[in-house]
Image 1 (cartoon, rainbow, N blue to C red):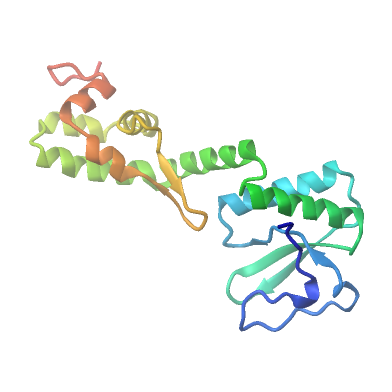
Image 2 (image 1 turned 180 degrees about the vertical axis):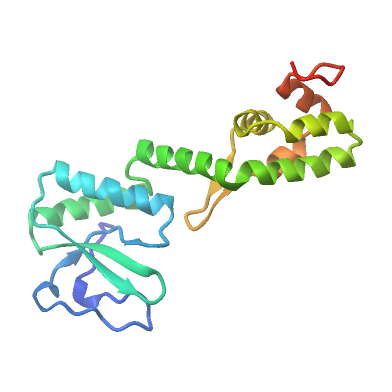
Amino acid sequence: MSPTLRQWKDFRPTPVDTHYRMDERENYYMAPVLLTRDSGLLDQANWEAMVAILNSEQCQEYEIHRFGHWLTGWFEVVLVPPDSKDHHVCINIAEKLQDYPILDEDKYSQMCQDEYLRSWNDYGCRDFQEELEKVLLDQGCDPEIIEQLMDQNPETMLNLYESLIPSGEYYTDTGNEFRLNTHLALDSVTEEKVLDALHINQNYEYE
């Protein structure tokens, strides 16, 4: 079934909200992707891809409107005049999203990779080291290895983290939440794997 776009006059951000009336835009249609302060990476990527498609199709009548909101802080919508070229392009975009939820795989993948590295540097490395120390102590790992481990820089620790997750599932993006899969690394950690990944010899000296 071909998707239909919602007209602005029928839109309310939440069921408890009143309609944001714009007299000259009430009969305009909403593009299929809406952006808020709390939008996840997928919505952000689809928003950017949608606007890029409109520009690449030389659409000139679409408008981006931003509104304040008590719940999400703000939200943005793209409005297009009825029966315009922009309107038909937005219908095509909605059809693409109906078939597959990602408009631009490369853009979404890059945004996830950027968020992965940012999360690692902001908190992931520290949290991983703390949990890894507990696991290795429980396994009876030599304290000298653990001490060296705690002194490693984020890049070295990232290499260790990724080596412990051979599937490549380093993170999960649910749409509403982006999180590192630290549990997968911790489930597979052994003293031998740490020695291997950090190139620590049997005398426990960092090469």
